[in-house]
Amino acid sequence: MAVVLLAEALFIAALNWFLGMVVDRQKMSLAGLDPHVMSTSSKIGGVLFGLYFVLCAVVALLVAIRNRAPAGFGRILLISVAVVHALLGAFTLSMVGWPAFLFMMVMLGLVVLLLMTYDRDGGPEQASPGGAPEAGGDPKAVTEPGVSPGVAGEPHSRTGEPQDGDDEPQDSVPAQLTQPVPTTL
Image 1 (spheres, one colour):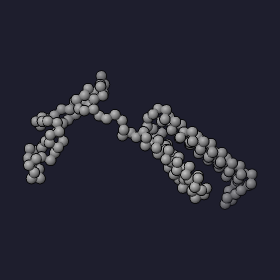
Image 2 (cartoon, helix red, strand yellow):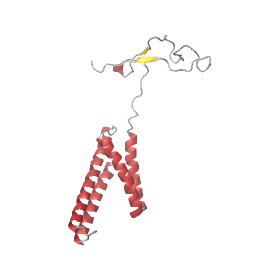
Image 3 (cartoon, helix red, strand yellow):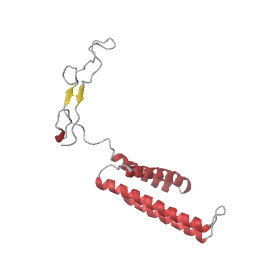
Image 4 (spheres, one colour):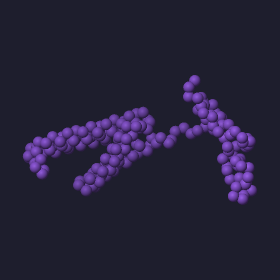
């Protein structure tokens, strides 16, 4: 995907540079604007837009090399390039045609896939309570003060009375507290 973003950056910069040259050579004017100003701003805009795509390609490449989710500015940059591709897709469908629209939608899908593949919710599952923190286990679970220890998973009632007129308590979560693990040695 980074290679395609780099190619896209070069294409966008070259296209805007070419359009700037056309405006300058034909002395085109829009609502009385100076053709030289229009030409220069088209070239500057093309270069800036190209650099934006190059920066997005670098972020995508770093995500692939590090095999980690993008964070902070890189994540915002990739989300913004996804939005840009969605908007460019709508524009190209109306102005250029279906092949350009499909290309933009494929690029949008690749950027979204990159963002979703490295989702932050994944990661190692928590070990069962009682494991050593150094070995990757969770801290030892202790019984909540004032509650008699019971079998894990057995329903506990906090008041000792049936709730809603039932014979059995409704609270099925064991009353346990987890002690914090020190972060320094």
